[in-house]
Image (tube, rainbow, N blue to C red; front, top):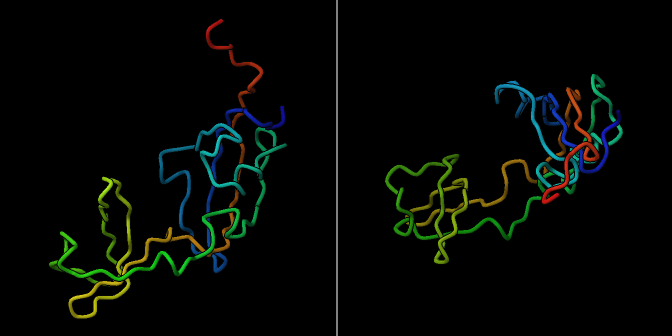
Amino acid sequence: MAVAQGDTVKVNYTGSLEDGTVFDASERHGGPLQFEVGSGQVIAGFDTAVMGMKPGEQKVITIPPEKAYGNHSEDLVIQAPKKDIPQNENLKPGFVILAKFPDGSEMPARVIKVEGEMVIMDFNHPLAGKTLKFTITVVSVSSAKEKPLSGA
């Protein structure tokens, strides 16, 4: 049975950058990734790539930034006073902090630079602007047609 919109699939995958650096793999998370195709649970390019695949089938795909984590946006690189950051004692480039906003929301940011009393942070996803390569193997497919209707 080929994967179709709405099906639940389990896949093993390895994700790498264009230079071959592996950034993620299903084995790091204890086994296959399970998701509903078309539900937005995974990046768009990954979702589209599994369509039509069958259990046991493997393929290698390349996903451009706009179908992955988007392009890098300079608007998401901001500067803030060091005193406004609770974890300001040992801030160094590369550190990831959890920024809290007045509305109560939180978002991770990577410290780019510390200049005196100012901190430059990047709120882009770490993979924003990157072309991603995935090796995907479909482990199983549960058809959306086989699922019982709720409330029936």
